[in-house]
Image (cartoon, rainbow, N blue to C red; front, side):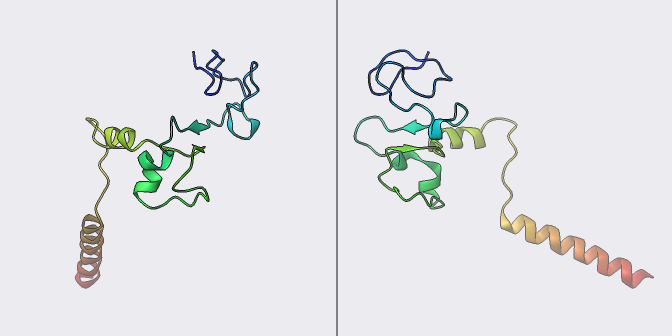
Length: 112
């Protein structure tokens, strides 16, 4: 069972607030929105995928101590490289595919 980040008491996974100290456990008071919190002094941004690829627009970046969109870089890397995972296509593959399709269309129109 999860524990409250402030008082350390055991809480239910769906609890919005800690019954002991009143700390907010879920974002915006909604049980389905996970609120990620930094442990210690290190900000979440240091290990967040969105910070690393520079796509984060959170106003507390790069010093955010809590965030609803946090994704651990290590988890993302493991997800991409797991066996059987679909690998992202490079832009070169896309250009080649478009060129081949256009070439086939041109060839087909010339054959008529």
